[in-house]
Every structure is written in structure tokens, then in C-alpha cells.
Amino acid sequence: MVAMTPAIARRCILTYTAPGATVLDPNPTAGIALTEAARTGRHAVGIQPRQPQWQSVCDANLDLAWLAGAPAPARTLTGIADPQVANLPAAVDLVLTGVLLDRDGGHYNRALLDLYDDLRGVIDWVWPGGYVIITCRAWHTSRGLLDLPGEVDDIARAVGLAPHDRCVALTSPIRLRPGSAATHIDVMIYIVCQGRAPCLSLRA
Amino acid sequence: MNTHRHRHSRTVRYCPLEPPWLYPDVLAAAAPILVPVYTEPGHRVLLVERGQADHADRWDTRRDEAIETILRLGRGATTAVSAKASADDEHAVYDLIVCPRTGSTPIAEWARLLSPARSLIVLTIPRALLPSGGRNDGVAPDSALRREAALAGLALVDRVVLLHHPPSARPPCRKRQRLAVTLGGHRPSHSEAHVFQPNDTERARANAPRHEDGENGGEHRA
Image 1 (cartoon, each protein chain N blue to C red):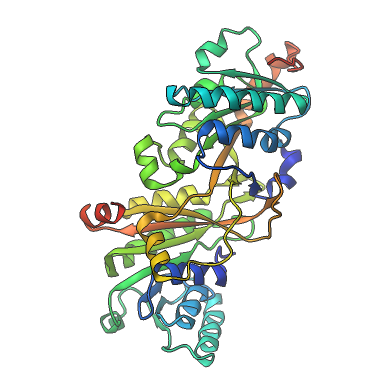
Image 2 (image 1 turned 120 degrees about the horizontal axis):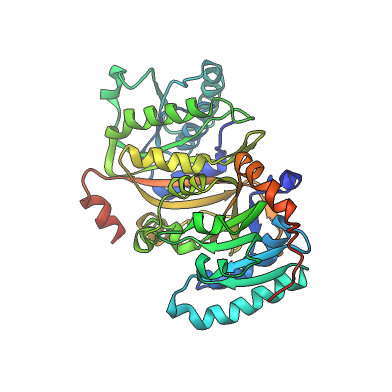
């Protein structure tokens, strides 16, 4: 399951980019982030999903966005070594991706390694001061709680990203009564800083 | 407490609170929500004071509120500043310990006061969730907290979001509002409660002697 919804993707894109910006999802799975980027007038760039079963869903979503009047078609690269990288409209303004995990938390380590590889592969494509947003959620499994947000935070710091904000996106309605419950997805926001200067100036 | 797993599938709890969201405020607001989930009537709850002089008045007020709430829920409640002071008490074993997340949360010390199969909750206040706030307070990443707990024989079993402010349904629509958010003007509106319980190995080791002692935590003390 991917911890991403169209509403979350749209809100992240609208908040952290301007029209005409470039949004990249290094592992688009169903193409939710790319679709919302295209529908909101951003350049959407994706890399072919690691899991082949997502390819057709991703293509269908992007076709629908194009038919719905997206100003520019999304580009899908075959990998980080794709020669088309040189033809991208500009450096990337926002990397937006969700962590893919099986329903029972299977392939947990694989998902984390994939995320590390994805981020390391595309981090140099992002403007200094650009944003990387990763959505994920903790999972209760038969083996206990898998604290995916905590692991994702470690990975993001390991590839050199600076924490910027940490938000909660509710995925079910909540009654405004003390103690009432809901579910959520963690939205973790980082800044790409080459050296400390851009990051510090933003925080100031 | 696997019997409560169905309740844990909900990861957010609405916990209304007016700013400033300091630890004593969050603790008093969270107590009526977390205590019934992780304890049963008759259990003993320990509330840990952060030990900051500037919050002393606020702590006194909020502590009394929290204790009153816990007693009304049928649990015993006491407070402590440090694990050492609390350990002087010969009955110092608790079913639930709630402590703040600081630069050096002494999880191992609190874990020694925990009865088998019970819970330690580490509360992270909203300011510490922001990167700048975290740096100022010296709060370590989540993974460091988890590792320290693992060394103390505890496993993370829940991470509960305590929502203090109604969620905003619409994204910032004006350019200036969006800029404010991207430049770090985003107002945090939630705390987090990391819930740890003894892992299976630790629980098996601790169960036998404590059951022989007949420790059932039935006291009600304030």
C-alpha cells in the first residue's frame, strides 16, 4: 500500500511549488503525485515504477490527467541514467514520493533500501533550497509496530536532507470531541541544502 | 497489551488544548485520553515532571488536574522528578509511566520502575516536533529514542498523535500564506506520544519474580 492520496499530493504541490515548477516522484507507483502535479500546472517527472505491476496504473492515471486538460504531459524516465534527463525543463523544485509497503508490512527492509536509493539517485537534480516530501505511515503488524516514519527520517538525514517540517494528514474524519479517534499519514518535509548556508537562511 | 490492539488502529486522538503547548499542559490534556487506553482500574500511574523552574507554577496546577483525572478514572497516581527519587519508594513499580521527551530522556531508569507488560509513554510536545525546536531542546531523532528504549528492553508499540487544534481542511490559498508555510511559519498543532512496552524477552524474564511478590498495583495514592 502506498501512503499517498490525491488530496495530500495536491496540497503538498500547491503549498511548496508555484505553477510551472518541476515535481519529481522517483518511485511513482500509481502515479498519484505525478497526476496531481500535471493537473495543477506543474511539470511532472517520474521514473518508471520499480514494481512492474504499477506501470499500467501509472500510465492510465497520467493519460487521464492529460485528457482532463493538464497543460503538459508527464515525463517518465527509464532510470536515473536515462539520457532524457538532460531534456528536463529545469532542475527539480519538489520531490514528492510515498513509501510503498505491503499490507502486512512485508518487504519492509526492501522498501527502505529502495527509498534510500531513490533519494540518493535524484538528490542532485533538486535546486538547493528545494523540498523533498515523503509520505508514510506506521504499521501495526503481527510482528508489532513498524515505525516507518522514524526509519524514513533516518534515511532522509543520511542522504543529506535537512528536516523542515513534520505534518499529519488525517485519512479519516475526526469528531471535534475530546478523545475521538482517526487515522493519519505522516507527511515529512525536508530541504535540500548543499552546504549549510541555504538551509540556515531559510530557517531564519 | 494485545487486547487493545483494535483500539491502536486509530492513530490520532483529538485532545483540545489552548497554546502555549508546554509539557504540563499536554500532560494534563493527554492523561484522560491515554490512561484508559493503556491501564485498567486499580493500576498505578507515575507522571514525570520535566524539572524546569520556569514551568513550576504551571506544573503545580496541571499536575493537580492530571492527578484528579486519573483518580476519577480509578487509577492510582503519583509524580516524580527523577527515577532515583521515585525508586526510594519500596512500592515503586508502576503500570504506566508518562515522561517528557528531552535531550536525554533516561528511558532505562524509568523502565526499571515499570511492572511487566505495562507501558512507558514518552510525550513529545509540539515545539520539539519542529526541526528548529528540536535542535534548541536537543531532542534526538525518533530512531535514537527507539534505540535507547530497545537497550532498556522496551519496544515501541504505538505512536499516537494528539491533535490539539481542529484540522484545517483547505490548503493555504494566497501566495503569501503559502510562502509563510514554506519558510517555516507553519504552526504545529499536535503532540506525539511514543508508547513503549517491555519486549517479549524482557517480559518473560520479569514476570516470574514479580508475580511471586503478588504485585498487583492496587493502591490509590496521590
